[in-house]
Length: 512
Image 1 (cartoon, rainbow, N blue to C red):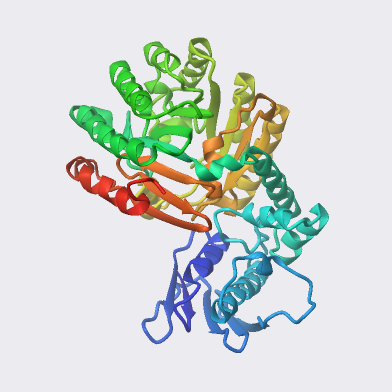
Image 2: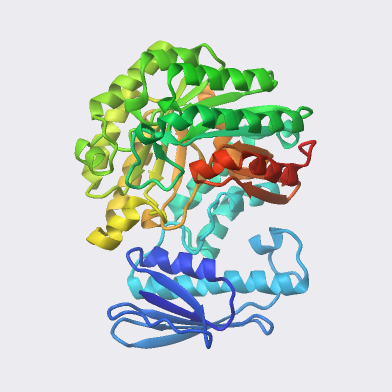
């Protein structure tokens, strides 16, 4: 346990995220001084933060595990007239108090990063950045007309981002600008439909996921509920253009062919698909894929499939509860190629328990032989509520070593490049291994980039999300608001009308 005492209830998320990145195997708890006290365990450091943004001063004290302490200060005064513009000034306009707080947060993160880096001897690939979308920074600079060299310097010098990650972020920001160059996206919307059933629940999973064998009797009722939500969405958004559809999960291909036919026909009957540029269905578990199911998908306007091995190491698949073989992955992939003209995405996870960089290299060699159109490389994130978190707490399973993640990430990047795939979207998660990221690579010459992934990351337009645990997003200019459906399956079935009402409050009856 690492205890972090702060004199004000402010910036807990940023402090926690940064400390956790340096100490991934530790529990980190922030608390307000005087309200309670959390003592760091023996062998762990402790931190004290004093924020005085009203006068532009911040003090951080770091007590090392051996008891040695040091204190450093920084200032965060407003910029002087004529001082060089920085990323801080490209953010939305704030009042004076909001501006002071924003500058204080960034000054604190820079100071905290330097101190923890010196203490641990680590340099994090994303430096002091803790947000989920680091590409927003170079994107903002590009919109302001900055030269590439100036953007790279700002990322490396101000935020301590490694040169490799700075170049990656800039490349993706430039690619996203091209992918989203159609201004009509701002007046359209996307549709997400969640199917929460799976053959089994994977060790790392925290999404709504219900083993099909135990919940088969609820599937038809679930489709009834989805159709009720579709009725609202189709009516509310009838004057807007639908650009992408994403059927995710769970594992949508756990549905029988007849159930898949029902779902896809329900979508086509209710929505105008004439503007849809991408229609994705996740076939993430190879053990759920059959020729008959794929033939159903091919008879409908599905353009993209996601077949996700996560690893091509059988020992890993067995450990994480996938219950399919490496050969099943190959078979499902080749079957999908036979049954339709789909763009095929495959997902891999770096940092899975027991996997070395050599294991990852072997997996990537297998993927290269298959040649998917789109490859998403995830760094493992230990999610609250997953069985993996419980395993770590009860069985002492540790986070992967930082060096292994770094080597594996380079192997993945190089393999993607060899396959002719370019990075096109990126996001980060809490508790992500090695402080790395999730990156999508696609064959851009074949227009194989997952457009929905870019749209949901960039807050370009609203995402109407249906199903248990689905989170709808309403975008009105720079304002983003959300409404969440309940996750528990029986609750969703009982409270479907309430879920529709939540969307009605979010969007209104006209989807505006």
